[in-house]
Image 1: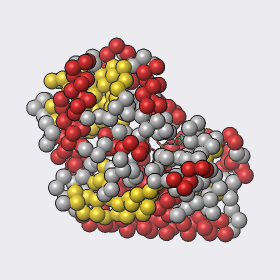
Image 2: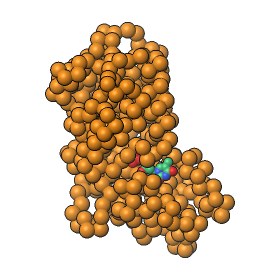
Image 3: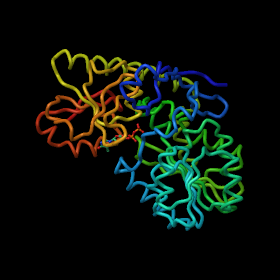
Length: 392
Ligand code: TYD
């Protein structure tokens, strides 16, 4: 049974940055989150059709977040050393920062966004510009054979039908093959109060507990879990066919940690929802007070997360003048729903502002390091994770 615990209000597509002429034609939906008492899976209540989100205009380019390029390089290096896979397939390959570390002849991309599929195709990788389904897996078996490594980062939690997703992986995985995927951790989100990781593109937020249930019912099992710092805390899950090898201690440890936190108890989710409401009140009050005192506020990182925060809290250009972002496709556009202009970082002088809200709080250290001059000149950062606070 699905039990609703969180209401984040009317929300647009979190990554649908738009032009002025499209303001009247925006898609909105009710963003609510539920907990499934049977599998322990957390999901949003109203799924948005994937075609609304993942299309030719999808702007999230992994290669624009330079810390992530290094992250994928290291992941590829580690997986090659540990498992020496011959045939590799990536689900949701984006602009290719993971797959580019593998041999072109034996590596395959699956990427429904045509703009990114073209990039990996041009790089010389065979790319299926389609959504991940069992039909596609069967087509790939016929054309390319079975895969020794199926990898996916920040993508599996985007897919509505997880049973079909995991069945498709089981079909395509060679007998001793491994399935490695990483997505934001529910436990870290609840610990940090980072409710902004719940949005249209993340219809599911994974705990190890829920994944263990879902993978097992589809013939796969988790044999190892790595805790990662990326995206505010993620889990890298290693799975194999259900009858293969041993289950490492990390699986039990992670599930125990989740039980101790209370991920199997609805009350934990109600407490979280209460914290989210308080976070909203505090953030709006703090920004409004600063504004009333004549302070200028901007935001760094036109993230899907900041779309969620700004729409949930009703923060628009009355409180935040402008958002800077390094992604070319977002620059010159307006943020979804609340329509704050997005500009390149070097088009503004940060010293003209008193406060910078961290839309990309997950890159807090990198940004604080880049913007030392802003702080030296008296500038301050604002974040809402783990609590609303000002720091410099
Ligand atoms: P990410 O946190 O992955 O966002 P999302 O919530 O959309 O998943 O993306 C970070 C965004 O912040 C991305 O659009 C690039 C931008 N960015 C900057 O503008 N400056 C920076 O220094 C960094 C590291 C990222």
